[in-house]
Length: 199
Image (cartoon, rainbow, N blue to C red; front, side, top):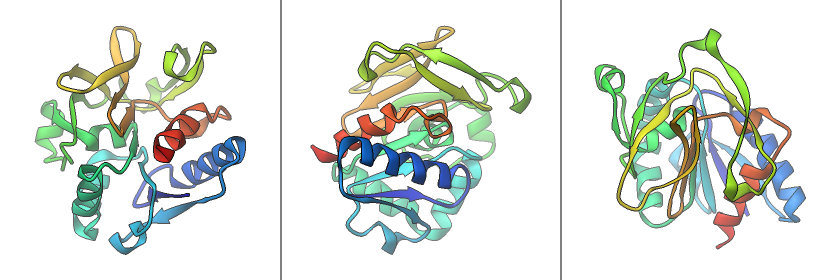
């Protein structure tokens, strides 16, 4: 199995490590690769769009040609996981802040997002989150300048909420979370995504 991590900005190395740890736990032979150009997406079984600065990630995806390539692969059913900024990039609609910064959106998920829904960098926090899809044990979720999903429609389904805000969603082979699963030793979210890639 080969998982491509969009490595233009943000928590890339942490995702590489978390994905490889999850593969080991599931007994999957494979690798996680750093992707900076469309050619590096050849033969991937899944793609991760990490956290970082969403406008920068979106614009760099455009200039490198990754934007269209990722969109094409997703439309063809390739599983994608978006975390924090990655959640914003996957959305069909954004708030005023997203519009003002001319944030490029892949427009793949039936969700509208609020950027910085939980405040600025200094308001970052960690919380035990109930995510039934990952099992009974709460998931330790790290929120850093996190977005939130304001609305879901169509085929998008809510997987978790915090303080009345939607923070995890799935739509077919697309998975998006407002937090940083790569910053915790718990690999269950990456394992869940890898199982999606095996189907």
